[in-house]
Image 1 (cartoon, rainbow, N blue to C red):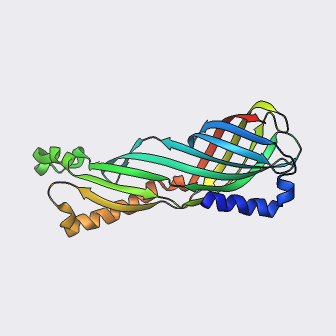
Image 2: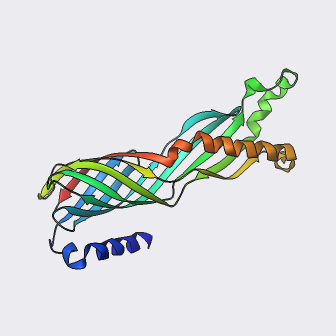
Image 3: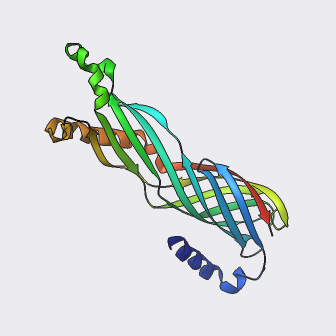
Length: 224
């Protein structure tokens, strides 16, 4: 529903008659890049304006040590895009602006580093595997996008390729539901609550670069 509303808004702003003046100028595409795999459909509004909508998905993981805790980070990127291309020179070069509607999040799962357990408790170091710090990092649902690109078959029928490079501004990361998952009820201790508060801030700082997410993609497209 959100994508439909934005589409109608853009069509209204560009003018309904203009948007459909070039009947049949539609493109479909599959793509891959830093947002994962995806698919798109586009409509030529004028000779120089193209409206594109699509969806992307990507899931991966990486490790990070934060404040004496070893974390496995698992970003899951789920995006819907609504983008407007402008071809200022009537060729394949394009400037692009728009929004991504995302359900992006990072799942975190951490354990305390065994090598940092004090010597007097070293015999119990293996118990750190039983107490996992878990939570989720969230971002803004609406993420503005700006970028540029090039396509091989702008204004021509048939197969072509396109390349895009830009930045999605998805806001500062926010950690939610951070807790210690363990069989001993550690979350009831005030020391653990203080520890989790420090971890929350440390995790947000560690993944802060995700607020400016680089978007690069290679697209295989067909113009009807």
